[in-house]
Image (tube, rainbow, N blue to C red; front, side, top):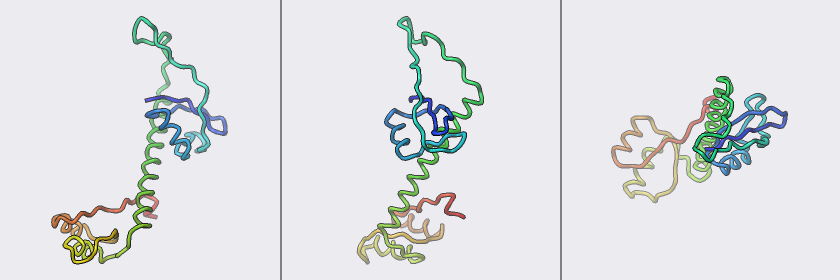
Length: 156
């Protein structure tokens, strides 16, 4: 993990943790990092002093000052918000890909899926609607099905 001090276009400075520098760069390029103060997604790394480890041990040469509790909570919240946005983005991307590349068979989905499973019709990508009971019955029969990702904004 790597911690970066970041700054938005309006000059707000904050810190966030990333799995690696390339993870930061990927999220920054896709505008997945937002300023917790103003919400701006135009973010850049601020100049940081590295934490130097002394030769005698694994302890820092000069201990870093303890972050206030509010700052630590803000870092954690910022990181979680960025991770949640990235997950939502990937789920939306998956759903959009399925909708674009598969046939919507609507409420005929359970019957169409069964026909393909048993070889009665040619296999093709489909999606549609099934009640929870119909989905369980398909799974019990060995038909591979999974729900399309639903996001909070879809429920409006």
